[in-house]
Image (cartoon, rainbow, N blue to C red; front, side):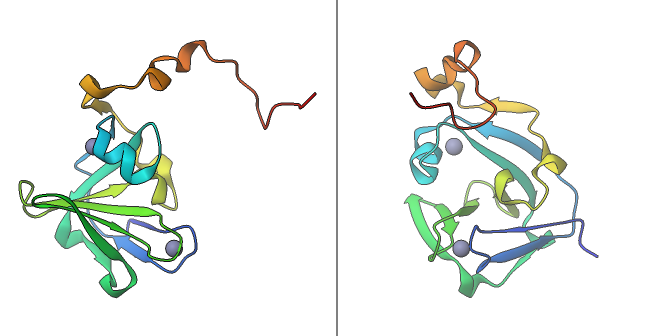
Length: 134
Ligand SMILES: [Zn+2]
Ligand SMILES: [Zn+2]
């Protein structure tokens, strides 16, 4: 049985991971933020050989030279990041894992690009669900 599994929101793209987690982080870089439409993106790094996925179920976008981002063409979920500068490794979005808590990030990377939104997290009002509307 694989150690981890995951996939996109619509279920059209699925993957399995049968290997150890190398590193888990959240990335502040503008490229990840834009690709996900989110203020932060969590990435879990594994040996590429440990990850199995039917690649006909994903589309690939070269976001910069030598950098490939894979996503579900139906629902748009960002799944993988692969780069020529990281041969043999694959980054998987932690939130596409069936159990994201299996890869809790231990670091923040590209903090030089941290947004005002993320900096404001600590001071924001918090609501357990959608806030009451007046
Ligand atoms: Zn999908
Ligand atoms: Zn990034």
